[in-house]
Image (cartoon, rainbow, N blue to C red):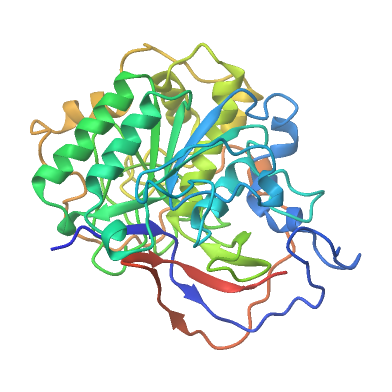
Length: 411
């Protein structure tokens, strides 16, 4: 069985574009005054009170390592933000190139400059991006790349990056036990170096609900996706590996596969990027904290499930809300050298070697993250109208399986 890595964007649905005014990539042409700006389409920024948060923290001084297919350093939203990085999948190639666009889209959600509201605005716009390419374009580089992936984690652990964003994963059944151990050892090393790791839980809740790694690796915060009602997205893979959740549906990103403009999208990839950006905001405000302390505060200040036990197997400890710490000053960082997820795992599971996410499948129904205040329900977002019939399209880069959902071109 080949170990095939999955980039955690949902499958695209092709629909009829409804927006009349078009944006040219690079922002050369502005939309008409009547059209929404790209910033207005980023509904989650308003829900997270980003404008208020940015008065306190923009993520300055924090570097996020993006383990993906590469990050396009020439993208207008990322100008001057992308470091040299390294390509572990195809060492002769530059990690600042991105043939698919997935890694670039995730980096924009973290650090995008917004291009005067005509491009993607990152939640932590002053962070820097360290691109680590672990997804190649050939059969050789697209499969059986677990060693390269583990090497990339170790490289990030030894770098100035404090946060590792992994919007991808290996499904459990594709990995040998030795390969899971290899990933775990790399994760353990990164945690020992004070790093904070976020990984997409996956998008197969209705298709096997298979756990993915490193989201299911001990000490990694697996990230689920919620929609604009703060209800778990139907596609979001669930289980004990889910530690937190973030917005992951109706998210505008730069269209993938070289297509021009911007597209609606959904997936735990996007939720993971938004979570990484949330951590960067908190860490920039508290630079002396360790990754364990940042994660503990994120867990404490998350919007808890409206019903059921905590942690929930659908949204973990809740939906991320960095403003609760940054604006309200809440959250106790606790001990610097104790990973809260490892401690919880040891307390609840007497057999740490048992794979996370192995519980029986169940319907997620409608478990939601309850807003902490009425402010969380406010939004100036204009509803998006989706027309046309849905057609599922599968795309691949070499033997990389890319799962994503397209909900229409919006620019």
